[in-house]
Structures are given as C-alpha cells and as structure tokens.
Image 1 (cartoon, rainbow, N blue to C red):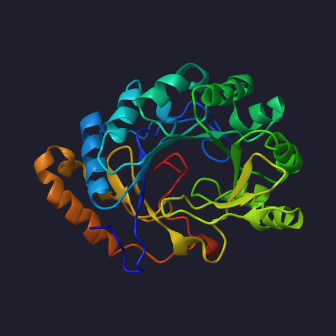
Image 2 (image 1 turned 90 degrees about the vertical axis):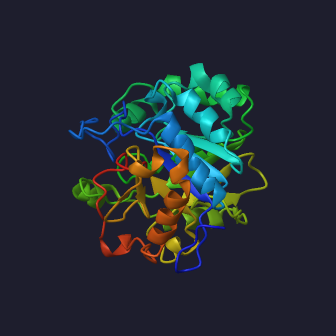
Length: 326
C-alpha cells in the first residue's frame, strides 16, 4: 500500500516537525524571535513519533526529515533520530538545522542513524549572516559543516534564501565556495507567509533568474529520485558541489509533490501552505490505533489540492515558516 492522492501523486517523504521553537531570528521567518503561542499541548513524544513514522513507513514512505523550529533544541533529539532510523522501511533520515550545535553533535547524530543533513546558511559574510539571522554564530555554523564531513556525511546540503538588497549579490561567492566542496547548495526562493507580506514584496528574488544564470554557465539538470525533495538539482563538470533550486512560484512546482507534513503537536498537513490541519494525536497513543491512523491519513489525501496556489497570493494558515516545519 502507498499513500496516494487524487492526482496519482505518491508520498514517499514525511516532513516531521518536533518543535516550533527556534533560537535564531531570521528576517524571513521569525524576525522578532520565537513567541510561545499559548497552546497547552506539548510537542510529540518519542513514542508518538515512533507510531506516526511507523504508519507512514508501512504505506511507502522511505524518507523522513526531522524539522522545527530548530530540532536540535530538543534534549531528546538524538533519541528521536534513533527512533526514526529504526523503523522498518525508512532508508533516509534527514534533518534541517541552523547548525549552531552541529560542531559538537555531528558524530553523535550520525551514530544515531542520521543519513542526511541540511544546514541553513544565508550569507558567507559574517556581518550579513548576523543581520539576516539575528545571531552572531557564523563561525560556529561553518565549524559545524566541517564537523559533519569529519563525522562521515558524504554530502552536506546548505539552504540559502537569496533576497534582493540583502544577500543576492553573493551568488558568485556561493558558487566559488562549492567548487571544491561536496556541498549541495540549495537556493530557496523567498515564500510569502501570513506575517511577512511586506517583507516578501520588498526582498523577493525570483529563482528563475538564478536558474538562467546556471544554464548560461554550463550547469546541467540532474534526474530526480522518487523520494527527493522539491529541488531542481544542477551539476557542473568543474565543480565538486551541486546547486539545488527550490522555486515554489514555478507553474508546475506541485506536480511532483511527494511529501506530507506532521506538525510538532501531531497535526497532519497536506501542504506547507494549506488552510487546515488534521489532528492525529489521539491515534498516536498506542500501537492498536495504527490501522485507524493509516485510514485517517489516506482519507485526508482525497482533500489534497492540486497546487498550493502561492502564485495567486494565497498563503493558507501558515503565519511563518517555523510554524509547521517549513
């Protein structure tokens, strides 16, 4: 059995948020820092995480990305990695992190079963890094990337949001940086969210302009694997690194959607920019609920829309990218 929607899209990839909390203040996400929502419910426990991942794995999911907020803020983060990695059928266990703990924990996370890692780095200039993230942690994050390679990760993905008037002029510097490093540099187009309309209007940089630059300079599109994320990945014979482009405003962006999302409090989301979430928490309390859990997820897939409609200015219920693990 595979989770499949009405548009014959199969879902091999689960993005699992484990916390809303983040210790950075990135301008495009949480410029004023994390503010508790006042919700009483706690974040998913390790047992609940095991049950939801097991249900997804039984229905064809082979990749889980552990997200936040900043997932490594959880004291049981290593246990969560181990729990996810131990579920039959899960081949890739990834995380997205701001990297501030990576230098100290890369070996530990690798030993626990983490297979892929993404680190957010929005500038190679320490001053601009500080301006965008609100934290003077550039040296620590760069040391973390080095530590990941030393721990045995064959490739590190680096997530970068290029923005007009801020860091867009750093494109040549970023490309030079990956010429001799096995880094997949992923340029993520700035996305409009409920709290960031004005910021989006001022700083949005089209991903198409970056793609055109790559194509004009000898970069070649790589074929996709079934559990890949949404990036178009480009390679170049003279570069050890690769470039991934995530362009949510491209017309056919949603045609290859292969991922579902579960929030840190146990809600199933069809899309980062959906307008509702389905509470799964009651079905995560014991193993006997698994058939009902699977049935609930599959039945909700009938409601998954053909597109996120971002190009029409719709942002759904998402106030910021930390809300359900952007």
